[in-house]
Length: 307
Image (cartoon, rainbow, N blue to C red; front, side):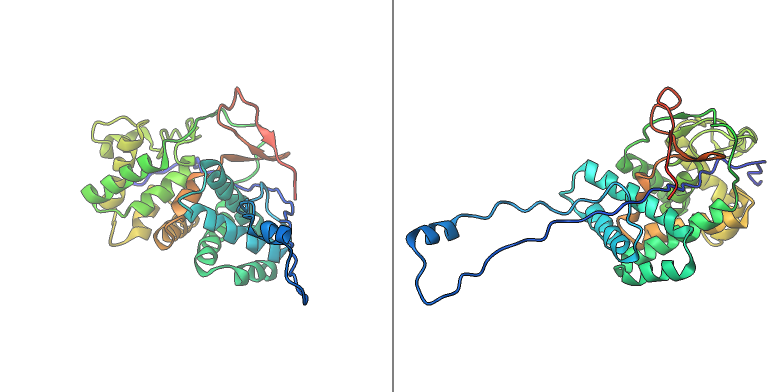
């Protein structure tokens, strides 16, 4: 049974921010001459250099192709770094999100210029994100009012990954597809609200479909909803024919392509999932793109400047 809906609760995430960032070059001097250094010079040379701070991911991406490519590679390295702080990894994921959206709206020549400069893994993830952004944006139109949703912090990435992997072990659907669906439907559980078609919960089930695949669970519980999504996909062709299974989840070729692209990126890159987990909720409005922060609607939405 297909999860038919008049309008999907899919958020295309078009952050439109841009800026440049830079680092100060290291400076130093090379002593050369025919005389031996003085005692004070020897003492100075033995003094340890101050600890160098690692480059920080900027809050918003640059607009030039070379700088943008450097920032995307830096974001990927930050997501891979086990010593990176949570704040730094959040900044990396958010920059990746913004950059992907910006690239999706750029001319093909510009995109190729940026992609050609990237590390191989970063290029793969970025290319997949751009393709997904382009097809998802075609599925939505700007709205004239903000949504009646509530925005919450999502469960921790490790907890969600455990749910996805449990569903893979029990039901046989690769966890990357479940994470990708969760990303597209509700930004991994940030959005709480009912779609225009009546779909509910973190994986956006219609109540009638939930009766078939929910196994008596709670439609709003992440673990139960992820397992139900795996059952729906398995009943409709997964894992042998994931395109058919995804089409039954949401009957849109664009949706199938976008989810498949995100899933491929998660399988290819060990850090893609963590980056996606940090992506924020944005909403396309007639006035522009709004960030719906955690705490919305009590916390006001923020209109982003156009690039």
